[in-house]
Image 1: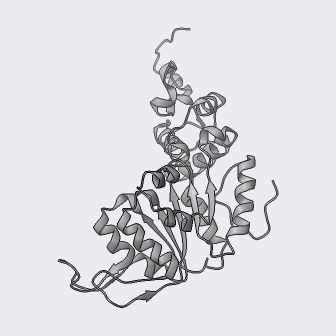
Image 2: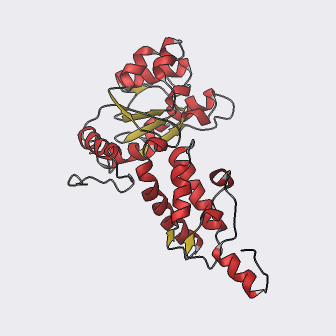
Image 3: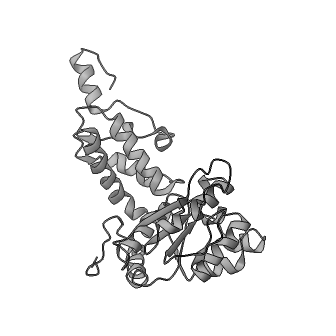
Length: 284
């Protein structure tokens, strides 16, 4: 696959037609300041694509600031986004800049934007429209030059119809919309991703694994991957950690139980060798 000259895309791994489409979109979107909405199930790599857009933009020398909108309660999220003035609330012993200020001239990534409360949606809409906001407890408007990238695993069309997400904010966010397919729809990439994670985790754990066996790869390829790439990464890390210290091939026996459901677990080659050395006979 031909890579477009100058693009920084080392974090995006794949060999299917979807990757060529993503590369094409990134090459066109990155130079602009357009807002981008990344859609897809959890674990499909939305943040990686957001970072690739930033890394290939004129803002790449500035901050990339991520915010997990679903991980923080509403009041805390507001102070994280917009900051606060000294004395704005109990415990505000000093002034604190918010994530939008920290991302000035750079990029802010709002993950799981679909979990944002309606009142915070109003404040975000103002930032997108006016490029300004006030800190909590403040009266002075703060101007920012921020590229906004957002991601969601929710169906925002449904959320808008149900009144849980503002329609005007939705259209502000989806100037460009990128959909990332689940891993089960790009099975041709499983082997590439698995080998990538094997190389990463064997170095971290000091293992001597050289490759993944055909049987183990067959197990990986036939699994449904409800947790997508994140689940695959965790599965390979589990297998590397659980592999015998002297193992050079990653076998199915080292994979987590969900991958081996319905499969008879047999002794790994190294386990068989230890049994033979100990004089333990095995049934044919």
